Length: 190
Image 1 (cartoon, rainbow, N blue to C red):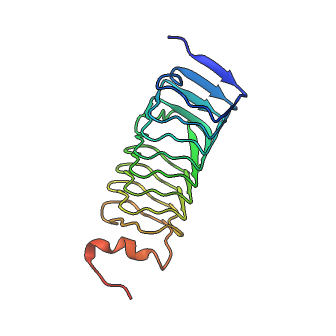
Image 2: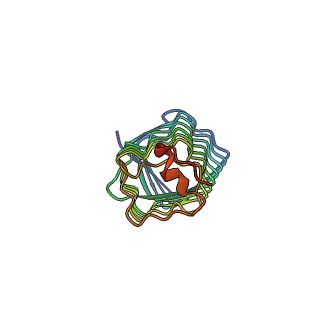
Image 3: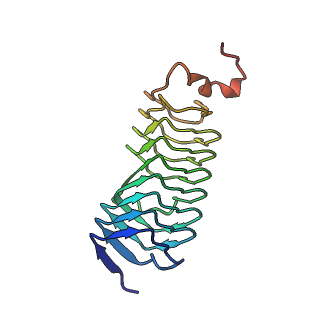
């Protein structure tokens, strides 16, 4: 199947069908208020694209290339990012809902998550070196066997990270959220 190439196009309030987005390359495109619910992103590449107020809930990301992509106010509930193309990639989230999403075993160095809801997100075995979690709700997020060296958790909250199962060298925490590193010890901090 040949790949379609779409350049410098705006998509506004567009509802994409299940396979409509597959096997395409989008460059310098903007997606505003689009519905990508349950879409299958097989062999799709996005370069220098922006997504605003888009719904990706339960979308299937299979071998998707995300190169300099910004997501703002998007819903990624229950999306599995594990098959994201890791060759050349850069993508960031701002004001997004990522609850129950999976980033299992991905290289997410220097990734930015800003003002995101990330309840029960799976970061197991991921490399989060120098990532930024700015004001994110990380309730029940899993960081087992992750690398979070120099990761900034300073303004995030409701996380529980086991320092014995997660590499945290030079990670940044605030005095208020440091108790999230002590949960397993059932210590009371006053």
